[in-house]
Picture 1 (cartoon, rainbow, N blue to C red):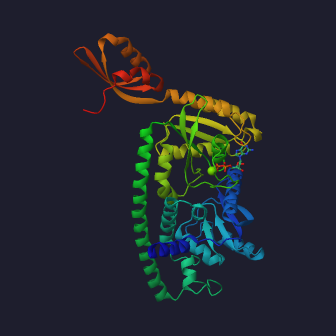
Picture 2 (cartoon, rainbow, N blue to C red):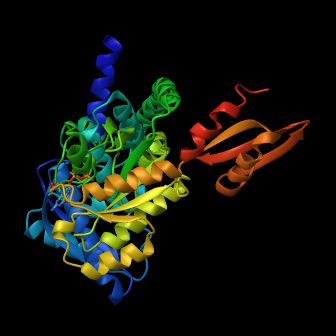
Picture 3 (cartoon, rainbow, N blue to C red):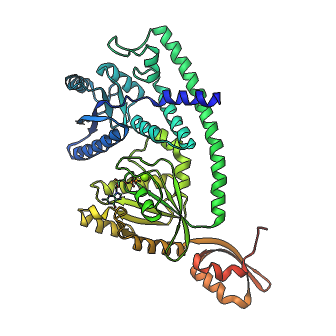
Length: 445
Ligand code: GDP
Ligand code: MG
């Protein structure tokens, strides 16, 4: 009991990195003029992340930058400009869309005399706010701790603020030198120990989940994972189909934990639908690492439903990001249906047509208005019938027609002839399963 309480206490401290309900300036950079529009769109996404967290965006700044400055990322002159802007408009916080190094972050905080965070930290903060299950909480705290470890010398972490007695203000921040360094060493050790502890806890939770997953596989019910960029309508689709009580919000990362629901297709086939956490451009590494197993498990479904929000001007990039993440998770070869969602709000017919050409199996729907769901369900039924299963068969020569059918429709991994029988290891489509059941060699030799 005592252990639980102290754990929660420390979680609170680590998560509380970003001051809430503050006015922020968002800073993005671009290399050449043709990248400016993209930079601005990415700043808009950063703004909605900030909004999800509870921050107010007062100003967005797209900075042309040919070369990254090693000490302040954007260079001295620009920093001074931003300092003046922040002073003038009484802004509390600067958020960089790029990943900035611990050293740059420290230098920027010193110069601006305000907290400076980057995209990674903001996303970690959003995840921290939204983590519900024990596993998600552990994963987020692990990500936050890993992010914090090289940054303990910052001026505005909650840890250091506590140390300077809630000050962190005018006096230039920091702490008495010798004492401060000693304190940082202690903090570092505490944090490392905590990271080890979290990793161990995570292992435990995973073991438990793996058992559940195995049980699910054994049932043989086909699973569909609903995947896609954040905010494309994944949870809305699950709700439209199953009336599941899931959180739907026009915010990024409303869903952190995967929700699974049973669903019966019109042909009375039972399936499992899994709602997943959304992907995002440049998903921060500490989070990818911490959430990897959750993500991996989600995309191990039999069939993926890739949702794209076709009402977004960023639809093409978002779809590409999702497919990249799938590749990273080694799930890009899974059967996949592309679901063009929010068709009710799409103003770019041409883009939809292009996507229909780019992706082989597409369907246009509106999850919100329950339009196009019948076509989606038809596609799902068809995909299930194409699913392959590996079986070992002993077929008597009198049934040779079956062997040639299997050679035609399945994928034969090995053939052996034994007296009057043919021994086959073959991947078969679902519709042949019943036909070969009689010849299946049970158990392994
Ligand atoms: P998720 O992050 O992918 O799970 O997205 P949500 O299901 O939480 O939905 C994000 C937002 O998009 C919500 O405001 C939904 O109401 C909205 N939305 C979802 N599907 C549709 C749709 O088909 N049409 C329109 N216009 N909005 C949708
Ligand atoms: Mg969701």
